[in-house]
Amino acid sequence: MSHVEVRDHALWVKHIHGNEPLKHKILSLSQGELIELEVAGWRGAWVKMDDGTDGRPTPGLKAVGTARQKWHAMNDHRGTVVSIKMA
Image (tube, rainbow, N blue to C red; front, side, top):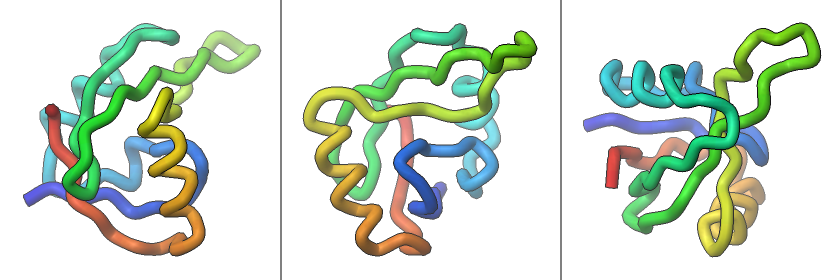
């Protein structure tokens, strides 16, 4: 089973454990590209973060829509480990 630690308003690839294919899929996305994930049992859309000002890709996702509300609410319990997988 793969899991991710809730650490920030962004979902960082380095906090995903037990799912290398998912990590590689996220890292291969272009900035602004969407991906649907199931996190803690709920499905939602995530967008690949914009590249840095120096052109390097940012290894993280931001939740969009209803997923944003759910993910941000989870930040009240930072450090919590929840399940994650492709939806």
